Length: 619
Image (cartoon, rainbow, N blue to C red; front, side):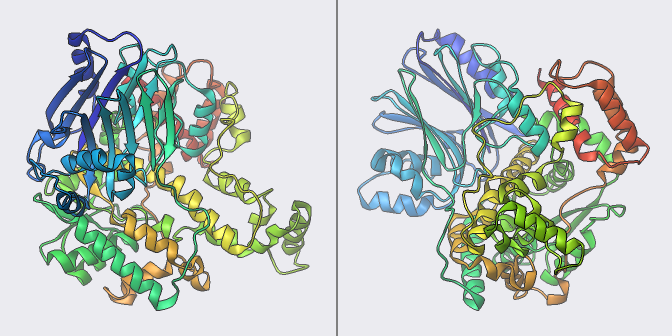
């Protein structure tokens, strides 16, 4: 794991000592345990510079793996992440006469770009964010992996002075031109509704997230082009059903796990009581043997506690099982580290148990395999099932659909899903993902603007059949829910100095998922059936749980109990950030309702708490 940073100036260059000092300050702000190596590279008399902080571990033999200069001195590259198919790309380049000085994926990537240009990016299978500078053309490229596993942020100085990029958002606050700008109130609205900030948006003016599967082409004159090199298809064509779909998914995942298990470091797996991580663990166990370590977090008081299901999987798979039971007090003690780890405001509360899992596993391993991505690609959530249950009704105008819904509630006709009462699939999906209603948000934060005008994630043009609805659902899960989950895992892993790989987001697995009939995943009204059947080939069927519980915690109870001092301190001891946005009297009423257990406001409260925690640490 490497935290990468860089500065490019469009107008006046910096004195070399100033640029070097600033790069080091930005690089050193990475919030992580175990970042020991560092480096700085400068070019063109202060016009551009790269910096990095890197995790020191046996799997990564030298700091030079993070930063590479080409043999011809034509270009330089800095990367955070890993290219899993770099050996195949290297072999192809060697067949063309290319010689290599090291065994690193960074050097292979640099040579690939110099050989094939930016078309080389589409050859990559991995998790990465990188910057490539072409000295002759004096142009900079910033690129991010297909799924958004590795983050990359940037700030464009509004006066045209230059650009800063970094692996973590809070690093942009140390820009050589000062803090980027005021809070974007429309983005703050988006954050409070969705509990994270989806790409390409960022909290402060003039700052952005590079979108998954995109790259920026930045010219020395300040011209910036944002281009997509990969995008999840909105309407893929499927040719796999039944046993053939299960076979194909199995073959793709086995290949992905094999690619991602190559390491000289100690490696283990995260294990839940669901489907995805047990499936990854089962395949990893077959490839690694019985010494494979599996790590689980539990709490006997949670309604969603999966630890006993995970234990059954571990016994069935014959892996080396590790279980850590945590309490509300453990979570309370973790809060300061959570505020430090959230490099941008982030309000998915499951980051806390995920951080505990990372902290627990890091004591024994340096690399972990996770099951992220299975729900989004193979229809593991209730949302698509709800959308499709009476989805054919979306062919009718809203008034007729609402009449059908009302008639069903009255028993006049068979009952319809409440989803069809939404104005559109887009309104349904955005609404079900919101943690605060618009009505409540107006009371708590009357100073907010509306959503960003170009926010289009949930746009839905026209009903064209149930298959169209299913594909729409997968698309918005991939670019919505998945991005929140990946950011959570990045924060939790980086802060503990742990490398986490996600085989289900391997490009071969994604390509295979797109070939599978969506309804094969939702057979008989159940979820993720292709992966469930695949898991059934590795474990006893009775081991597989019937319902999905998710990785959660009793947040509402903890807010009234061990976390109550945190609420009182952050929300009512001083002015709230940003100034002039929140109505503190309304917020106190909101808190009292939750405290008296009259209403459950845990999600809204935690979103505001996380924002205040971020501001207290970073501003």
